[in-house]
Amino acid sequence: MNNAKRIVILVDHRNRDLMLAALLAHHLQARGIECFLEPLEAYHAVLAAYAPDLIVFNHINSSHLVRYSQRLAQLNVLTAVLPNEGIIYDEASIRYNSGRYHKEAHIDYYFCWNEKHQAGLREHRLGQGATKIEVCGVPRFDFYFKPWSRLFPRTQNPARPVLLVCTNLAFARFAEIPESDADKFFAPFKDRIPQYRNYREAIQVHARERERLLQFLEALLANQAYDIVLRPHPRETTGFYEAWLDRLPGPQRQRIRLDTQSNITELILNSDLELSCETCTTALEAWIAGKPTIELVFEKHPLFYHPEIARLNVCCEQPDQLLALVEQQLKTPAQPQLAEARIQHLAKWCHRPDGNASLAIANLLAEAVLHKPEVRREFTFNEYRKGIKLKLLRTVNLPYNFDPVLKLKFALFPGRYATKDFVYKKTLRPSDGAEADRDITASLRLQ
Image 1 (tube, helix red, strand yellow):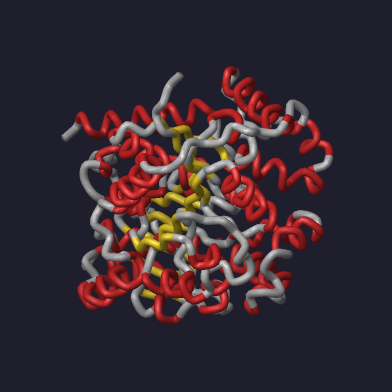
Image 2: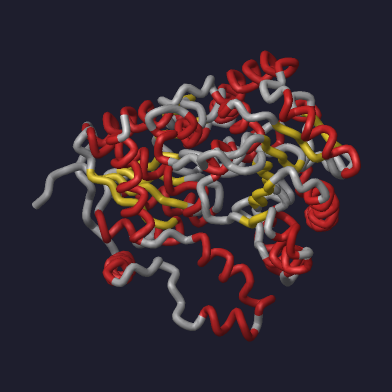
């Protein structure tokens, strides 16, 4: 029997999270650890399928994951949390994400982006205070540094400057589906984070801001000097943008493309200027990549707009002002008046990105599993059943949540099945993990 230690890394969104998971697995495999990348939806199935020594989650905030973490502790399976979304700036959200309402979760390791979150976790005694809380920065930012930046091909001599427009309007999709879906999504935190209490208003704000965004895009298209890449947030649906693009005149349509599949790092590295919708982590990534940024300002709702971040970007509130700002920033792409403040912000909130965060995390995980007791293989019938299902679906390259008639159900009842369709489209397939591993290996050959 193979005695190698095993780690499962759960991938929430394949477009956003896969490459980081593959890089983390690369570092772990170099330490002799066997790694498996599986979709978050398969969290229950990986237990009997692999008998892992450790499972990496993106969060353990919901009650079903809290119960599952307790089950893992019974079987000597370690747990680790590695957040994968944006920075948590406000105090109420920090409290929620620091386990204030989930103290019974069993978490062995928690990898923070910054000291602020670390302090919150310690204050609220995550895991009854037994959790090892490490500040490692933002590991997916490693891809802005060599050798990992070589993963992404560079556009050679584009005919026109490329403007990357990153939308951050994820709540707008709830305006298009039954209210019950929104109620279910916001239920865990609507009464625990004050800013989410009136989430239906926040949904309408994002819906209005999405309409307003089109005016900014049309202003950019009025000048034939630029090519535009439109990148929706991973949690947005694209039908709204596709319908707008279909209405554009032919010459304008040729100068803008909707890109939902490329890695965001690749898009930023191949852009000349990044535009974000109010507070967005992509702006920080553009700073790291040395790209100028413009922040499009809408209604300044406190959930979506943070003045301290806006001060670090060139801001634009009116579409008729945008072209002049774009031209000015392209002439001075270093934006020197903001450079020092940005460095300080990245140091405070992202632990001084240097390309080594994923390696630091991998080293800690490797040490954890190399010195732990063996997994107790006392799985239930249901756990075995789910593990067998996962293995069978892998043989035909299908994700764990595969439903052979989902496409038909969504076509007949789009409102009822919108959420399931959205989740299915973001779910990792076995071939995705294999391809990411090949890309990581190929990048090292380019050194």
